[in-house]
Length: 461
Image (tube, rainbow, N blue to C red; front, side):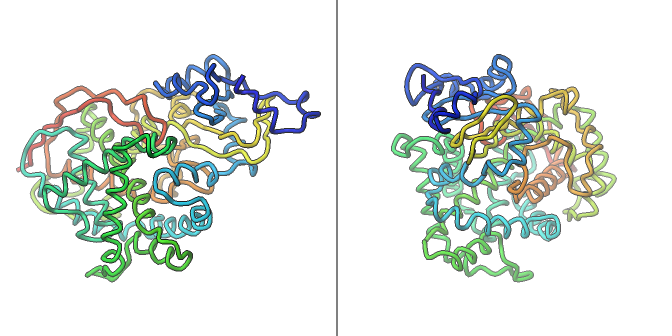
């Protein structure tokens, strides 16, 4: 059976004393359970947990993935020195952004430390002015009223805002044809990212075309990004800091590749989280009403003036942040991963080196032991979190864990908070469709909606 490869990981004389987790393979070598797993991976994981218990291995497409679902296994995932984040993700990074292993491993730690400092809580509110300005521009473009698919509305707001803030003011196109082209290629790249991270590029022609279009876009614009200076304070953008570090640390021409990686990381989760947050709020009238009352109490009669959103304003509107975090809990990434460097013991099993150790925030957040009434949208549960000290609820793992949590998590939360505030300040909104189901096809990143969800918006007078 394909799962028997585990015997190769330890000396023959020791094997009789070791036992691997239950293994779900298949009759076709290399492919293993790939077909069944690929149909609906989130459902597959939960069915396997129910059938096989708190630890099990899935062999799919030549990869052994060992899933842990209870505390002992999760503690190994979080704390063991025998599991590694960088080695788990370097191959997907190579496939999706064409960054070679040696370059990625050399630069990852330094880039992470730099971005964590730049986007961390200490420097966070330096972004509020620029975010407000860019959001106002896009809301002006939205017009006074209309009906749109909510996901497309969010894309039309956040694509230009994020690009202009993180890369260079004015970088996002203003020509309608070029805007459509950007949307088309980024959406194709984002939607195919999970397959692109696992399969040879030659099998994904349309995805590869969009990837190369985005790389060419950065290749063309890197010189302008390098020389850009903020008219207000001459501060550098995140991408400029990345370019400086690349120039110091390597002779390789990797600037477009890291630009693509930053673009995907900054948009691929922020867009669906904003979509789901707005959709959840609008489908809970009492919560929607309370948020509108809060916005009016802080900013005055809604819709009349252009407002600036400050740190103090945000602190007076905690319900919005709770709604965002509750949304992320309910639509969390399907998996996060580590590579096993040396065999590790979990429960009565030995997980061999070479396995990918997998933890599912999506299912962890649905465990009633950690989150009572886990399927309900209950923003008030976040009252217990010490958010002023930048601490989430225990066992909330949507941003990853340990040393390499998402470095842009606080900036992403800030951007979404400001987006929600300004939309509800300027517009009366209502959903024209029921809340859509989430897609069950993806494990990477926040869950996407399945089908459209139209919103009607009308500017307040």
